[in-house]
Amino acid sequence: MNLVWFRNDLRINDNNSLHKACQQDNVMAVYCFDPRHYEIGEFGFKKTQNFRAKFLIETITALKASLNELNIPLFIFHGKPEKVLPKFIETHDITTVYLQKEWTTEETYVLNATKRNSPKTVVFEEVYDQFLFHPDDIPFPDFQKLPEVFTNFRKKCEKYSTVRDCSKIPLKRDQRNLISNDTHIPSLKDLGLSDFQKDSRTAFPFKGGEKEALKRVQDYFWQTKKLSFYKRTRNGLVGMDYSSKLAPWLANGSISPRTVYWEVKRFEKEIVKNQDTYWLVFELLWRDYFKYVSLKHGGNIFKIHGILGKKYQWKNTSEELEKWITGTTPEPFINANMKELERTGWMSNRGRQNVASYWAKELNQDWRIGAAYFESMLLDYDVHSNWGNWMYNSGVGNDPRDRKFNIQLQAQRYDGSGKFQKLWLQDTLF
Image 1 (cartoon, rainbow, N blue to C red):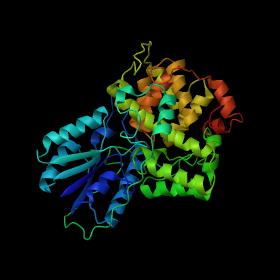
Image 2 (cartoon, rainbow, N blue to C red; image 1 turned 90 degrees about the vertical axis):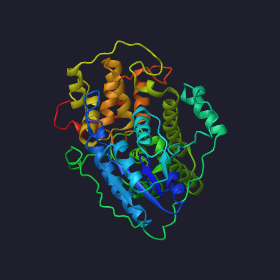
Image 3 (cartoon, rainbow, N blue to C red; image 1 turned 180 degrees about the vertical axis):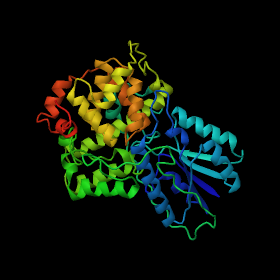
Image 4 (cartoon, one colour; image 1 turned 60 degrees about the horizontal axis):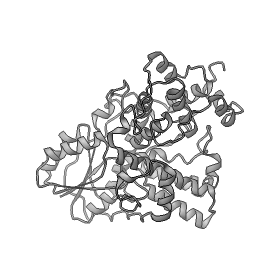
């Protein structure tokens, strides 16, 4: 019996672990809602709050339905993987576990503990499946030689690397494995969280799941053709179409970056090829880059001095944190962005850079507190991009310029009419 252990690869399209497992006769799948993901972390926030948790529940519901169509049962547990999986592996006589390779601290601990607790005969077959450019295909075979500047990484990859084809959806199994599966998907309440109604102002009104991701691609690329304006609108603040909004689905692996890339290439061939279409691939490369940065620097991406080892005098002021989180700082543009995050779990790219710069550069507060709050709240939290971007904006990461945003000028440039600020500060004066 072969087992697919789903983690951040929650799809059936272009999923190499699933594809490999289905080359064998008997296949089962498993997903664990790790209770540690819903507990309060080092910096005082629940690691996953209700926005991303609900999106994940929707995603797992969709994944289970898609696997059912392939006659592959998905077993769902609310428990620590290193406790749950070894028993499951032994009970069902699993010989090989297929899974996406992860390397950050917590994921590595969980996998190693699971291996230790499992029968020694079990093979864990890991694959890198979250990249645009596979690690074997980039011109930096030694991760320690990865450039510390994104532009150098991008130019070499664009010149020397190619994007692999997507793997096919496995064929439907001849018959369902005759195994009882009475496991169920936990509710928000089961996870210790509260349900909520979506805020009508949200720029991300979408649901989780692979089919929803593909529907978004169909709409943004082919129905509205908004992709052809992407670069010109990506710094927008209001509405669902100023950017692709694919990040939440990419973050939990409901869609692969390769799928997005090849759809861009098809769009360029059939509709138009311009700077806007290129820029979406450019953003996928940034996503890749932060993953490679964490591969190179390991746990340093979580340390206060970052990957540069710069020793600033960071503060930890509870009053400033309260104002920042609740959107009651002296800066209306910061407040509007923080209220959007608090009410919806979403914030624009432009907003994220400004609120991070304000927290770390204006207030000189411990940047890791900001990163941890984003981890808790963001629908599209991705460990590599989140902590990489926070280091970048805080002067301890991959930005040689160590920039600081002028918040008032940013507000004038990107919200000159005040439309965004009025939307989120309508019950306050500014």
